[in-house]
Length: 151
Image (cartoon, rainbow, N blue to C red; front, side, top):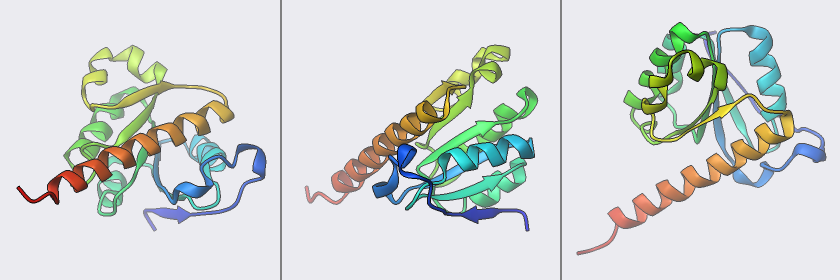
């Protein structure tokens, strides 16, 4: 199976995203990093889709996500970000990208309108994820509300 989807409960100390009913996409080309990120971000009410290749990202984009966490080698970052941006429903997705990836190719900062550099500790990652998910959901809700207005 190319994609793994999981949701599980994490102890209360970092369970700060629990009420968001959010969908996260974690992209990592290293299984150890993928598992660690999933462990840090898996909380009650959060559905996580994992992808390890650009093709898996493309397949994952069939369903919408509120946030993408990207941790792939520098040569793959631009492909992943362009795949996200070009996918229906993901053009405005917030993205967390490993800082070392951005330092190796600063032009990546312009690939998506909203991104945040990491690494950071687990609590900061969860806080950033919650903040970005909230921002994305508000922006999408506002866009839908505006498109439903009768002129």
